[in-house]
Amino acid sequence: MRHTFLFMLWIVSSTALAQSGVNIIGSFPPTTGPVPEPWRIIHFDKKIAPTFYQTRVWDGVPAVEAKADSSMALLARGVEVDLKATPMLCWRWRVEDVVKNADMNTKAGDDYAARVYVAFKLPPDKIDFGWRFKLQFARNLYGEDVPDAALNYIWDNKNPIGHRQFNAYTDRTQMIVQRSGTAQVGSWVSERVDVLSDVVKAYGSDQAKISFLALSSDTDNTKSKAQAGFADLHFVGLDTPCVFPSAS
Image (cartoon, rainbow, N blue to C red; front, top):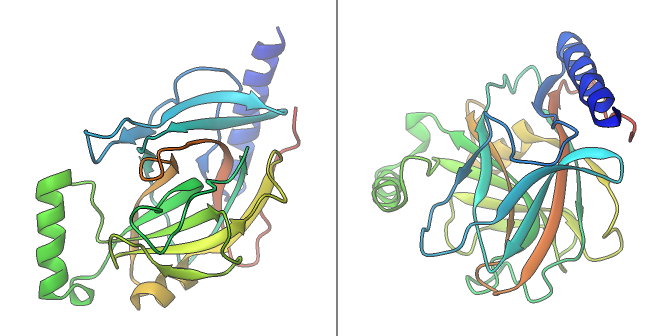
C-alpha cells in the first residue's frame, strides 16, 4: 500500500510541477527497478563493462542509483529546453565516496563518482573543419550519440569547486567541478547551475541546443568502484527557484 501511495503522489506532484512551468527532466518513480523510458543507456566503448543503473527510494528520495565497477556508460535522455527561457538546471545528487585515485588531468585518471553530462548541438559556424573531421571520426567509431560539444558537472575528489578545464580525452567536453571531496558524501546535495552561461563560456555560442542530458558514474580508467544517486532534475528560469520535493 505504501508503494502505491508513493507512486500516486509522484504522479500528482510531477503533473503539478509541469503545469507550473518547471521543465522536468528527471523525476523518478518511487520503486526499485529498471529506469523507465525515455531514459536509455549510451555505451560508447563495448569493450568496457557498462555502469549499472536502477530506480530506488534512497533516504526517502525517489532517485536513480548508479553503481560503477571498472565501468562506464551514460544514462541519457533527449530533452527539449529553451535555454533563453529556462537556463538554470537543478538537481539533487549524492555519492557514497569519491574516486580516490582520479585525476582529471590525465586519461588514466579520468573517472568521477558522479557527473551530470549535458550534450549540445552547435551552430555550423562554431564548428571548424578540423573539429568537424574529428567529430565524424568519433561518430564512425562510437556512433551518432557523440555530440558536437558537452559540459560535465562533476563530483571530483580534490579540485576546488568552480574549477573548469577541458577533458583529458577531448577539448569538446568541458569538465566543471560542482562538488569536491568527502565532506558531503552519504547525503543528498542540491545543485543549481546556469547552463546557458556555461556553454557560452566554453564554446562561445548562445545558440547551442541541448541534444541530450545524461547521468554517469564511471570508474573504467582507475579500475575502482563508485555508487551515486541522482534525483529531481529540472530546468527553471533565471529568477525561478528550484523545486525539490520533501523526502517521503
